[in-house]
Length: 123
Image (cartoon, rainbow, N blue to C red; front, side, top):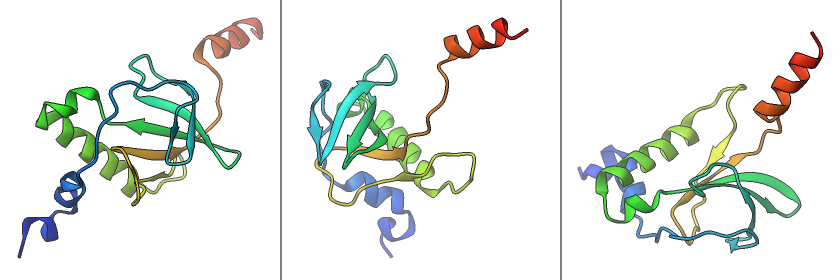
């Protein structure tokens, strides 16, 4: 029995996909149009496809040279996809991807600063 048959994460890691080094608003990745980064490192983006909003998370650029970082990203994507709970956004790893990323549903919420302002104003 081969290792990838025992551990599906090995198979997921073995897929030869590039990791984009630079991402910009309006870039289109497999039909997803990048809108804006959600985190300062520019690896997690709000994206739109067919009028719906999603979160797209790319592997860190460090994963290009550092296998440990790649292992951690693969594990993160695998766990996000497996987690099925009403309080956690659904995640998928598209089969026909052109880059190393995974997709999560976008859940609208308040920005922390706005939440604090509204909370303090309502006291």
